[in-house]
Image 1 (tube, rainbow, N blue to C red):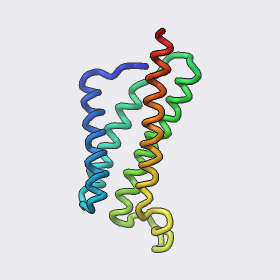
Image 2 (tube, rainbow, N blue to C red):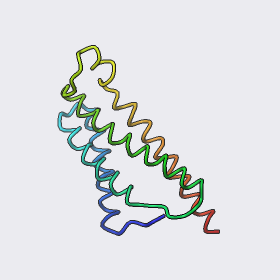
Image 3 (spheres, one colour):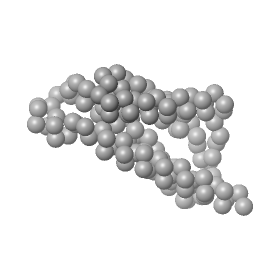
Image 4 (tube, helix red, strand yellow):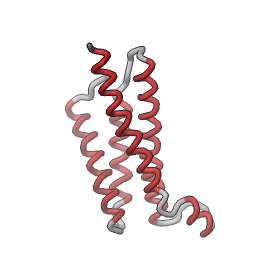
Length: 131
């Protein structure tokens, strides 16, 4: 796995912190929360996509693909969070309530669980690979 430079690790950390602050503030009904979460998710995802795996291990490659799916879900959660703030999507009221209203929570939960699983498993697989 390609290691991030020091400033890239800081950018990833800042992105993760912005995501946590944005999600927490959205739960507390702060109107600025989606506009903190979305850039945080962009920073986090961009830095995580810079970490590449050049090896041939099938398990790590599969886990990396799952991690990319998780990254896409983080971006979708940010979009749904902004759409929850104001219905900028061309949807009628019933479709908005059915597909958008507070569904960012479910998408964020799935993304976080996938991210937790893959980061733990990739670390274990890389340790096993070095032994």
